[in-house]
Length: 474
Image 1 (tube, rainbow, N blue to C red):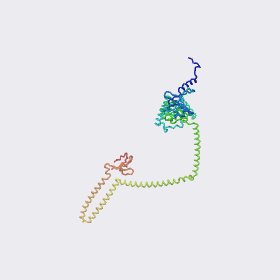
Image 2 (tube, helix red, strand yellow):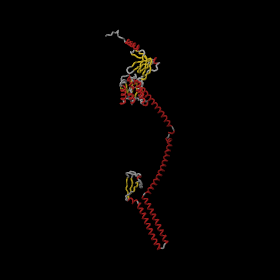
Image 3 (spheres, one colour):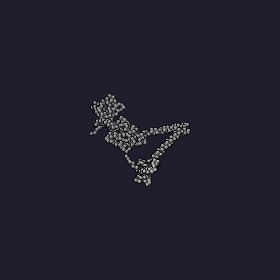
Image 4 (cartoon, rainbow, N blue to C red):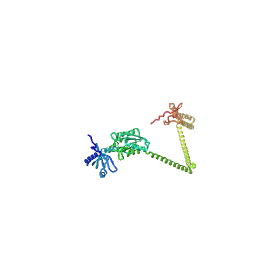
């Protein structure tokens, strides 16, 4: 069957027919759904879509109706709207003209968003204290976004304008749809694993909650949180807030703003350096001038005409301290010399030869006293007795005295022999003397390894060196 031109409908006619059919049959209806793709125009009109699991429909709440609404639409809200179907002929689309709107709860995606946000906030992933500062002058900028979207072009344009010699590495990923979140997380991990950048920008353009959902996944939040590289999040428009924005170190309202945050403007930095150089040179010149004036003033001061003006008191104090030290040192040396002499005398008194000499002197003294006493007794008896009797008496007494004296002399001799060191030495003993002062060594505590000593034996002496000392412990 061939259709003629006269039978064909124009686009306007068809649209008008559809408009008449829809608008006449759906004059008063109620629809329940989740708000998405919300846009508030400067005129005060709200444009949004209502969606469920399988479909969505456009809707508009004009400013006149919005003024009386108790609840205005928000992204992710479940709402109940009342109104009528309208066909917008210029675009060939149909939409709901909303007269009334009621809140019916949160949408599924928004509930999921708030649940994850609450969980990560309790884990401390949003803590400002854990945010990393952005580097002042990054050498390499990493970007995680779509290679074909407007985001990368906006970033490149800003960087070319602000810092023409920038170095950028793009890790291209999907930014929405199945597998997008995993690609974004893997790209962030790759940048960290290989240390490819000093700062990362992750982002995409604006869109609905569904379009931005890849940046609300926990795997992306985890990759951002564990990143050692500072991350700037630039997802959607300024009114769009994602989990990635909350976890990132810095949130930028737009990708262009993220690029501006990443690098400083080159000509401003050059101007700053030139101004800093000028100010530094001026400050140094002023400091040198002031220093020279101060030095000239110091040189003219009377105190600096001769060094002795400043040093005289110090010289006198040094001389006084020197004299005090000499006096104290001399007094100390005298005291120590007296102590050394006393110790020498004490050591000499402890020497076996000195003790033996003292005992001999005592014995000779006893012998002389005994002889004087015997002579005195004899003389007395001679005067008292007759010659014969005296002779007999004297002989007997003399014999008796001689016997007693011989016994005492024998005892003293035995005693002297017993304490004579030579007798002990013949039994295998020896006496150690210190090599320095020839004093008798009385204890192992007076000895040190490597010290030289003199061993006195009965038939001579031996020079020895101490190898080890083994004190006796109580």
